Image (cartoon, rainbow, N blue to C red; front, side, top):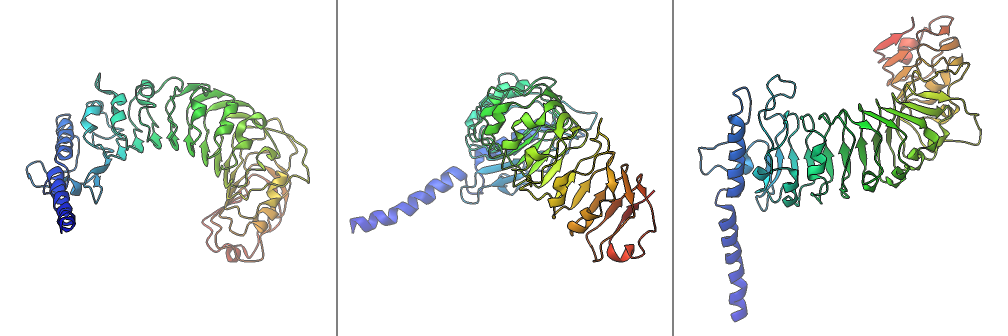
Length: 417
C-alpha cells in the first residue's frame, strides 16, 4: 500500500513543477520577458523599422505562438528565433542603430537556432561580446550574414559554442585574413563576400575536420590551398570561386576530397590540366564549375576513366595560350549531364553532336565562340528537357534541321548567329 501511495504521488509533483516553471500560459516567463526586451530595444531605433507585433499588453499571451519564435512542444522552451530583417533593410540607408547585446539572449538556454541576418548590425556592446554565447550550450545554427561585423568577431566567440554546427558570416566587412579558432563540431561555414585577404591559414582552420560545406567565394584570397585540407574528408560542398587562388591544382588537396558533390573554383588563376584527371576519383562529384582559369595541355590516356557522373559542367573561357584543342576526352564518358557550358574556349573539331546524343536529359547546351565545324545535327528521338541551345560564333554550315521543333518541343532559347 505504501508503494502504491508513492506511485500516485509522482505525477502530482511533476505537474506542479511543470506549471511552476512554465507559467500557465505556455512559454517560460523569463523568455517571454527577454523577447519583449528585444522588441523594445529595436522599437527605439527608428520608426522605419518593421517588426512583428508581439503582444506586450496581454499578460497571458503565449510567446510560443508569436511570429519568428518556435518552442519545443513538450518543454515550451524557445528553441528557434528567426530575427532576420527585423532591424531594417540591409540595403537601407538607415542602418547601424542596434548593437548586439549577447546578454539579451542568455535566458534562452535551450536555443538551437538563431538568425540575425540582413540587419546591418555594426557590432556589439562592449563587455557583452559573443564570448558570452558560451552559456548557450544547445546552439547549433547561427546566421549573422548581411551585417557589418569585422573580423574581430571570430576572436570574440570562436570556440565558445561547443555545439555549433552551422555558422554563416557572409557579407560582413572583414577586410583582413581568416583567424578561426577551433570549432570542432562545425559542419557548415559561410564566409562569402567578406573582403577576406591573404592566404588560408593552416593553424586551427585545418582542425575543422567535420566541415561538410564551405563557401569562401567572392573574396580576395590568394596563394595555394593548404595541404592539410585533405583532412576535410566529410566535405560535400566547396566554393572557392571569385578569388585569386593560384598554383598547380594537381598539387592541391582537392583530389583527396572523395565526398565532394559540388566543387566550384571558377574565376581564379589555377593551373589546370586539360584532362581534369586529378578529379577522376571523386565518385560523388555532380557539379563542377571551373570557368576562367588557366588550362594546360595534358596527354589524354585511354586508361583514365572518371568515376563520377556529372550533372553540371561549366568550363568556359579557359583556353588561355592553348590552341587547336578538342573537348576534354572525359566528356565521352558522361551520360547524365543536365547543363554543359564550353563557351569561349577556342575548341576545334567537328560539332560535338555526341554530347547531346549521350546525355538524354540535357537541358542547357552552350558551346558558343569556339571553332567547331560541320553540320548542326540533332538526335532522332524527342528530348523534352532541352531548354537552351547556343551554338553561335562557330564555323557550322549546312541546313537547319527541319525536325528541330519536334526533337526539342520545349526549347525556349536558340542562338545560331
